[in-house]
Image (cartoon, rainbow, N blue to C red; front, side, top):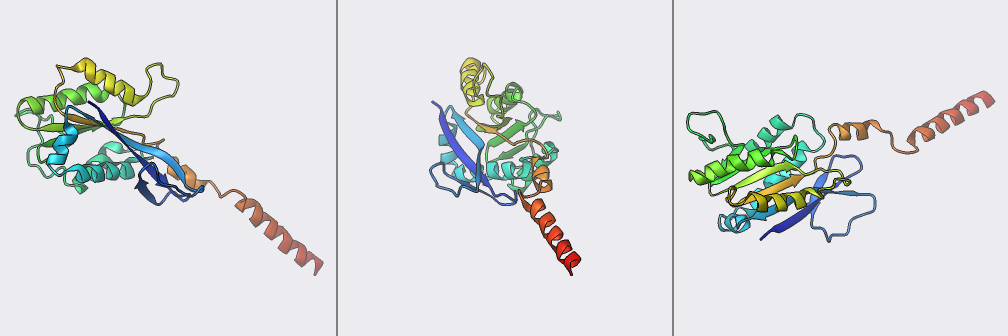
Amino acid sequence: MVSVRNYDKMRGRNGQHIFYHSIDVLVPKTVAITMSFELLHFRGSDAILRDLNMERDVLVTMETLDDALCGTYYKKELMRNALEETDWRRCEDLSILPGRRYSYKGIKRGVAIEGNFANYEYILEGLVRLQIGYDTGKIDMGILLLNGKRSGKSPLGSSSDMVKEEMTLLYPTISLPVMIALFDLGTPGMYLEEEKSPVAGQGNSEIEEEAHATGEQAAA
């Protein structure tokens, strides 16, 4: 059974203020609305988070990641910082295998976070890493962060459709309870480009004022 939760992100014209709202909230026409992230629960992961009283905690973590990584270049280090801020890296042992350097991005109260925003195909490696921790009793469930941005012309459909199909195909090899978060983090540097772009009509207005002032001086 799959439960999908969608959250919207709203960004003001100046690109500085971000807040989240449910999809049925009315907003001013001047505000641009884009899909921020989509959460998909598999094999009772939502019930586990509810029992651990971590639903709000996880949502705040997803919002923090989206806020920190959207439109940026250096996502690996920024993701690490965001998970440190939300207390996912306080666990002394993040290792996947004893004596090896393989490690999770974070662990909190038996829930491990793994992820990579470079490409969607990380889903296989990420799920295997989480499954190892589940089979060895290190974690009770996993959270996998993925790049959900996909061309609308893809013959395979949306990223969420692909996730649901692949989770079915991978069973029973992948059997752990897992929440998969699909992010649309935009284009790297897009907010820098917004800040460089002048507000429509502003340049013309300044030119007209300067020309008017020059004309008055000439007439005098």
